[in-house]
Length: 262
Image (cartoon, rainbow, N blue to C red; front, side):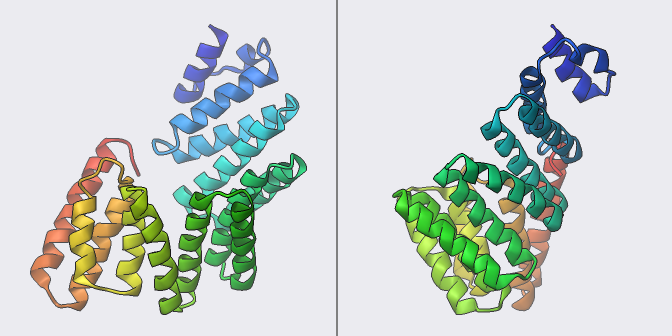
């Protein structure tokens, strides 16, 4: 009953301090973690606070792997929902240090890859490339082709930011070929969105429309696709298509808002 009340109190701003005294740090941490996951898209600010608190209580409970997981998830919220890159990097570095202490190579590789992406956004290109290459090496070491393919995509983003568009397209297409063999439409659409920016071509629109039929498409990737179509047809001076995709984007954003997605 106390744990249930704690969950409800965090969601509805009820004072729950008196109830936490009877719970262990591990119970509190687990509840904060669940709440952080629940609010990720619904209320990112509350999600971050809950995940940050979960990491604190996991530390008190000496559960270091869960502590690292919550730290990195808090970093994801900061970057993906608030674009707070520097703050996200701080949390990633804390989580990375724990995974290294625990000798968890796969988790280290995942965070090196992600840290490289953050450094790309901060224009720390040389350091970003070093992180992504090290992540790719570790994924190869662990025989994880999925991780390698994600590194290819991240290198494509890195080269795009540097306006090295041929290199960006090369790594994007390598990643796309891999995900096509896995029929992962969500990732393919994300890569197509990048290709629409580095190699604008109406063919990407036709393929994107097909991919949108999949339920696996992340809502932000759908929004990015509509925006890329607007940009592409603006350059082609096709005002009819521009109007069409502006309406589709506007209508879809209304649906997202109605479902608590920001």
